[in-house]
Amino acid sequence: QLQLQESGPGLVKPSETLSLTCTVSGDSISSSSYYWGWIRQPPGKGLEWIGSIYYSGSTYYNPSLKSRVTISVDTSKNQFSLKLSSVTAADTAVYYCARLLLGSTRIDYWGQGTLVTVSS
Amino acid sequence: QSVLTQPPSASGTPGQRVSISCSGSRSNIGSNAVNWYQQLPGTAPKLLIYSNNQRPSGVPDRFSGSKSGTSASLAISGLQSEDEADYYCAAWDDSLNGPVFGGGTKLTVL
Image 1 (cartoon, rainbow over the protein chains, first blue to last red):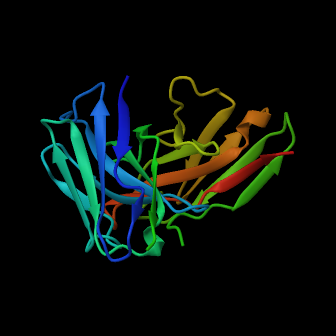
Image 2: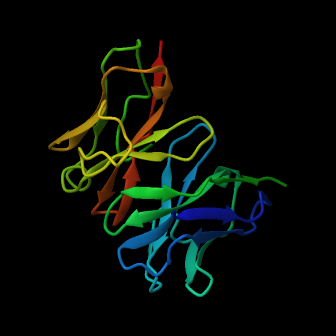
C-alpha cells in the first residue's frame, strides 16, 4: 500500500523559506505513470495546487506561486521536496503531498497533511 | 476566488438525494475530465469520482458523477449521516497547465 508522509517545520517566520519533504513508501517514485505534487489548504478554505514534479525532474508550477516555488525530487531516497520562499501569513496552510495521474487531477494517494504556520 | 465554482453549502435529510454542481470553462471542464473529492473533518481529501463518472473501488454506488459542457455534478442518493463532509471538484486546466479546484461545498445532513 502506497503511503506518503510530509515532514518539516510547523512554524516559519515571515520572509523566510518554507521547506517540506514528502517521503514515499510502498512504491517507487520513479513510476512513469504519475506526477508527484504539493497541494495546500489554508484554514477553513479550499484546495490550491502548488506544483508537481515528474521523476525525471520536470516541474510544473501554479503561475500564481511560480516565482517563489521550487519542487525537487530525490529518487535515491524516494522523496520529493517543496521550497516556498518569502512567505507571509497568507501562506499559512495545511500542506499535502500527493500522487497525481499524468495529465490529470486524479489523485488517488494523499499524505496526511502538515500544518505550516507563518508567524514571527 | 477558485477557478471552478461550487455552491458553498448543501443539505439534505437522511435518505434524500442531493446534488452538488461545479461550473468551469472550456479550458478546464470543457476539455478535461472532472474528479470529485470528499474531505471529512480533519482528514486529507479522498478520491470519490474520477473521469467524470467512475467510482474507485470501495466507493458506494450511492455516489455518482456527470458532466455536460463546462459543468459537472455530483449526486448522492440515500443520504447518510456519514456523508457529512466537504466536497471538491477538480479538473485539469489547459491554460494553467495544471489542476484547478472548486471552492468546496459543505454538505450537512440534517
